[in-house]
Length: 276
Length: 252
Image (cartoon, rainbow over all chains, first blue to last red):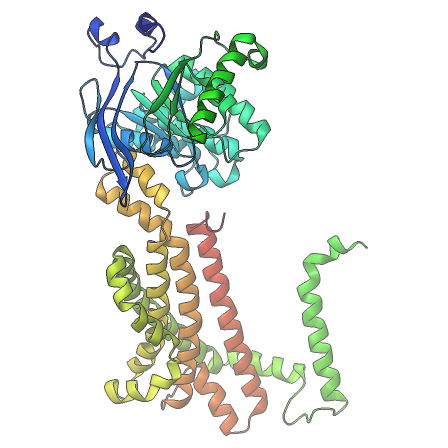
């Protein structure tokens, strides 16, 4: 169902991560069981099951109102569940390190802090002294090769730079799972293309299990190892499509027959679900 | 010379034209010089008033009263505003009352304050604080209520404690609180000056204007009016600068 599970064994996790038994890498990382979520009387999720393998990049795609963002918000603990459970290696979200990137970077960064302090913010709550915080921010920025003036305030930066700071803030705690909610939809096309490259590189470097909600099918397929296609509410899995195009992917990838076929397949399923 | 080079001088040109029109109007007897002395006479009166300490002292007294009433208003208004803003139910229950009194002209409650607090120097401060406080409560509550939900969520998902989340909300509301302070200073200045005129005051710039009018000392009256204008302008400027300093992110 998820392509070849053996590929999950590649452990490119950071050294600070706590060791897991070898068997853990064969198990799904995230398990959703019997998930229920209602908005008023309408069920968005009414008995939803999902397994997410470790260290994969998953794009979530589906019709409007199917609860794409709701799903990652439930997983990240931003919304309460109405039933069922979501576990990460058997643990609750409050027991693991989670990174979250909001769609609206303008409202997600703290404008009273310099970019540097914005990135270091989540480290405050991990009982790490100031010096170590600074060191980690510096180390992350160097490791990812990000070139921004970190002494600026968010409002002094372009939209893309602000979203880059948001992503760094999510990554600085070395998250086990990274969630991104339509992170590029507020950016112009040129910046979106640039940011996709950045995100792809960061994912290769960090290797955390990553879930991105996207409203752009090409983007969803381009970035993902697996595309999670959802039905209309009450939402079920329409399909989980494996994207086998080798990384790093480039503009040329978009024209490769394999990529085009996968994208067409996803589109077909999407159309089928929309018309239902 | 291109306009961009002259642009910074534009306000000075405006002032120069204003003074010129004033001078010509008086010099040609278009306006009776008894009612409106020339700018030179008024300037001299300002200079004398400030130099001899008469207007200077009054100005200082008014500044003290305004600052005290704004401090009083802020020290009550900001905490109350935060509490109201934090609970939408409490705010909804009190919204009408706050809005009602906020819309009541401060001068209409002067007699009431006289009855309650008597003809005391403190009464003027209370009167100034009253209107200012309502403006500060309203704006602070509004700021807290409209704190960006995303930012609070972001803090929460990053593991912020309740205290840190509250801090985010407070910082978030700060630009709006400053708007309240600005409005509060204007309201309190107006109230204090009117109170100085009519509540049996012996000092203050309002009393100076009133007394000059009673003695028909027109140059001194204009001098006092201009001084109160300068005071208002300076207070606004000071608040604008501190806003830039403390809430540098406002509106950006």
